[in-house]
Image 1 (cartoon, rainbow over the protein chains, first blue to last red):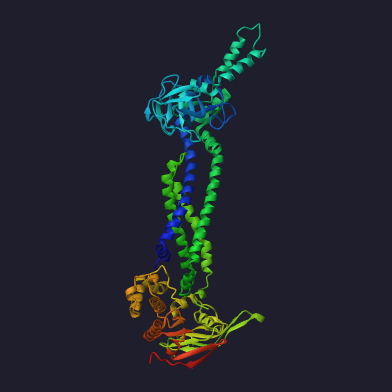
Image 2: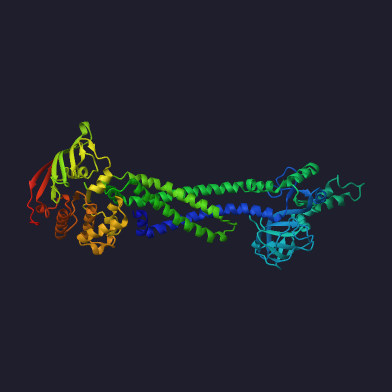
Length: 401
Length: 236
């Protein structure tokens, strides 16, 4: 038996191709949306992977440093380093801001790291694609290539200018902003640095405060002002453990003795994926659901219209003895063919358009397979309306009168 | 009566029930022998289309008896179980318009009924080509229906009706869209095919040009058939 659906598609190939192309663009948008979600998850995992940490020590009862603000004294890392099974511990600060270069701004996550000269210390960019790591205590930066900076560029963060000495890749925040690494002291200053007017106003207030400006206590006012103008806090301490150490056991020890909150890699991943991007994921999920419904409606309408155009032929087919299932199969095969054409166009569109999106779009093969199955299921369901209508066609319609 | 042909006795068809009931067919008696072409004529609303639908196993009669070949297909409420197979294997249809399937070429349009009956594609196409040759449209075998003239389309439609060698062919105003010359050609082909394949052909028509070609004519008026001799002119 010949394929009636195949012959009909070949006969009206232009109609099918153009309809499939339109549907494909819609499917392409759907795949990109799914890719954006995957990209967000991957950004989060990249953030954790690239930090090189086994544990994140943060302010007690916070979800810091990525999901909530966290503040720790910058000397705490010493006592963490002294804990059993801890190999390395390093302070780190995170600050999302606009980094200026010349006349343009780049949104970036500025990461303060301790320039120790030690390659692959926790928090450091694990690999460079150009240049070198930060070796000086001030005014050097390593930037992700996504910032668009090049080695030797001068960039401005708050009041200070930094020289880009190295470039790294895939170092992004959980929201996809590229990272710029600078020395910890500079980052601490940048986090709390106020403008000159604010500093003057702060000093005036402190001087006016009788608790700090006592005539009988010399040096108190200066000490108070000094403490206000320096920042001795960091957002987190990244901890790397000795080989074979249990992250949960060490985390429990730190929690118990230091009364701090400690997250393992799995817990931090849950915070990033389950909490930080959960709203975005639901938003994308809603878009995907709407796009699926719109795709189904379009396929249903197209297949219904194509079937309506063939009512007389269907009546003739039934009159000359065609089985209902042959007619149903013809319509369903056409719907599935439309889905396959649409998916192919959509996949190609998403693959080529993905890199142009500002957010990282990660198209996974398993998502493509799931997408294809979903498209085929939607097309099969959408064809049911047309099939129902075709099966109700009376063969008598082929006979006049 | 031979082993083919069609015989109808006391056929009735009533639409609706009670006060709104309409008797579309009150008493139809017909018989068409194998190889014979008879005309079925009547004014609008006389019941021609209803009779055609009953004969074509598309609607069920209310009473009476129909025999196709030597097998009863309807007998006072009893009917053949698989009407689809009956239509596919034992009844050929030729319509007022050819109603060829636009996305199949000429060969596959004709080969479709045997394919539906389970014949292998090659065999079905061979039978189709044989008939197309008999109807003088073999040279258009690979053409699509839209590339054919009206007369060619009608010949292809006749080939499709004949391809399963049904004992009876129902032709519903097959010459309506054609000019005189082509209409006469179609009637000639129907007569040739009827004789060649021992098929009984019933031609429903209003076409004054072809009515004199029938040897026997059934007039249907108010749901009742009356048989009369025709002139049988063109084919003496």
